[in-house]
Length: 362
Picture 1 (cartoon, one colour):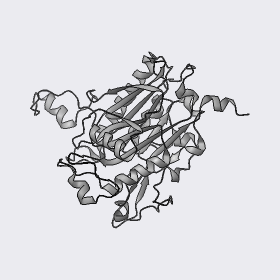
Picture 2 (tube, rainbow, N blue to C red):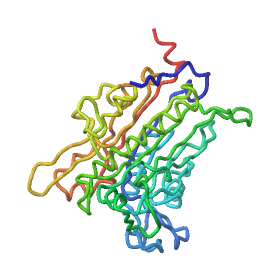
Picture 3 (cartoon, helix red, strand yellow):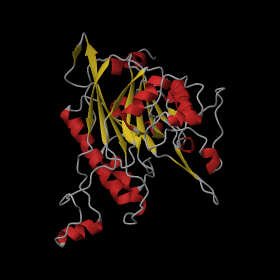
Picture 4 (cartoon, rainbow, N blue to C red):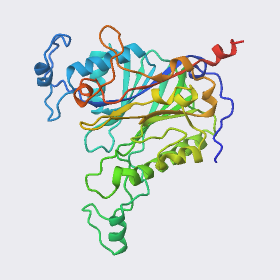
């Protein structure tokens, strides 16, 4: 196993203060306001809401957008790591019109053929500056069997020319967080966040059952990038890895394609670090019409060893949606009830204590 433990970093805000990070698949967050003219969004109807968009893609239902915003206000995160965002325009509109513009949007378009991108919302009040880096052009060293056979036989069926590898289904979007002091930015980040949305289990072409081979290749390239970042900063910068993994990556029984996380790194699921019972870790419900549903953890925030001692056990968990009165909603029992939720995923919440607070403990 490669030892990725870090040396003692210098003091900085990210290290010394309480930080809350939320990873959240917000399910098709499209918010286009091409025809919006300042109407009160608390009063418009769903029909009026949809009419604001000039896109062929419908806006996310207004009630669901409001519920997402309420969940985020309840959680009050410092940094949001979001999957399935309909571009920077949607992310900016969401922050401006539903979160009081308290968060700055950070998003680069990825490879998704559905237009669902990765993005960050970061509190504007934080004393940080940022670099946003996309890895969407990185080859994942993967071809499907029929593509390898075609190449070996000298054939190529792609119009763009010879293909040597596929790329990430969406992206790995890296947010480098720098301490900003007296208008100057440090040359080394105080933290790096890596956000991913791995290949889904859909296999419309029926060439990769459950998308497992493609997902395994994406996972291995993801870990390569993680090691590159670790080596670039000589182990002095903590790297947090999160996103929708579209499979069970939890210890002690991860799906086979995720075992490399534990074989090649010291990363740990923050929910495991916090001791959250396994039956409370699920972030997704697979519901069926004629048979019992399955609860699965598909969403993760993995932390390196140097952050484990900072994990606040009481404030690290999987959030369950609440109603307007602040009451936790019952878990959906069928597909119709599930469609009433603001997202088909529940967010993972990681709260890190400040080092100074830990040092004051007896």
